[in-house]
Amino acid sequence: MTPLGPALYDAVLLDRDGTLVEDVPYNGDPEKVRPVPGARPALDRLRAAGLRLAVVTNQSGLARGLFTERQMHAVHARIEELLGPFDDWAICPHDETDRCACRKPAPGLVYAAARSLGTTARRCVLVGDIGRDMSAALAAGATGILVPTPVTRPE
Image (cartoon, helix red, strand yellow):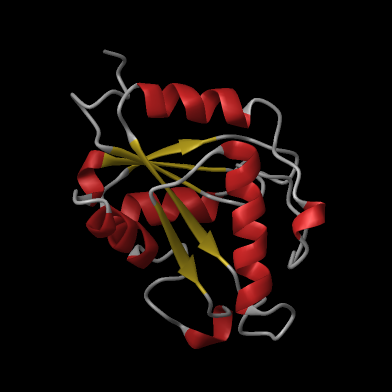
């Protein structure tokens, strides 16, 4: 079994925008969904290793009225059509001013996804493209894996 296999971890939690799909700010249009190169084969390998997969995503566009919940779910359906099914979607609908416990870098989404998948945060890996994702992993006690993109800051 690989180091990410069930011996060490039960689940992989993935950031949505910039990690699974190209980041389109406040996307409410399924036609704009474009997977990042290599995402589908990587996800297929994780599934084949017996790991459960969840998406953990901040979607402040809901709080800001930039797209509806229905539009967001249509985007998620398109993502699953292109990348395969996910076992859970943990979504923070708040914006920065709400000071909620779920918005990354807070650990709430990590805890919620782990609970939904029947495991603990310590048995999860969080894959993301920015420091906020890594901070959420650290705060929850999960393992963070940074996948650098052009928007990833060096700190």
